[in-house]
Length: 75
Image (cartoon, rainbow, N blue to C red; front, side):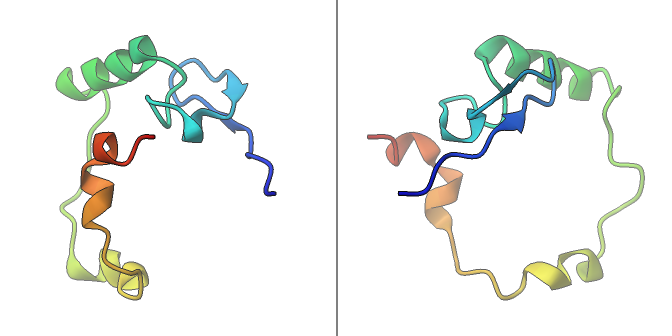
């Protein structure tokens, strides 16, 4: 069985297996909302427009409509 990898929460930097959690990649609902607030206040932003060549490395990935609805995949 594969052991879960430890990752750091992008907001508070705590280490844990957040990728398996409900708020992934964040450790908690609070950290997720803090990050969202930074996007709303434009503290986080995309500096330049995305172009087709930015996505070239992902062309071979399988379709994943289920990834857009993670709440349906929870067991």
